[in-house]
Length: 334
Image (cartoon, rainbow, N blue to C red):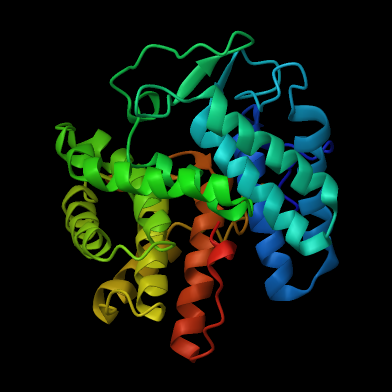
């Protein structure tokens, strides 16, 4: 709220660099995540400042970030490309603020963006991850996971499930089938261990989306695989968000009756998640935020709003679980 990561117009920067004391550029995807996060914080605390900030983020998306000529959300304002994943996250953020305020401006724009997901990115049996603007042509695939179709796209496809349209819901169900069919190779095809940590983050998107389905086998096996690889790779490179995402999926799956909770592993992941928070610092731009990650013993100089969002929600849910006051609803998943 007071770090400066949300700029005056409502947009949210991708991260803050502590070594250069500067924000990265505003990102539409990160602003979507922030909208969801701020709405969640308002639901937990009742504090109006969180809702006001959520509305600023949502209005930035609907009024400034939206490309009316292309009828979609560019990667960043003025960008010549758009990402399937980003748009789904933005839709979910707008819907979170709509549920909190009842303002139909946010729902209407979310519906338009969901149409962009369905029509602008459709390929031959897949949804292209990136298209060019304004011509909306798919960009060539690259080795990076974010530039290829994959199971991680299922979290973005939740936009179709949550928009409230039966035809869109069918698109989500088709995306579930496709994601489950290809999820194992998503981790297997990456041989570089540090890059595999990044893929664990993306693979957790897939697991998060599975919480909204009746699929249990892939959820159970996926949790085990992520936990194993996280612990193997962490001494060299560890991301805070992977710990938080894994902990969230564990807790939610347990309370849904889907996968029994490994309390020991969950406690370890909660402790690891909390270790990334900057608490004893004087700089208001950092205090309370969560670092992106560390390599060896060296903390990387990125105070990250999405890492912060995932980590704060994971630790809040862990506190709720331990206190026996679980009341989480799936649409609240950031």
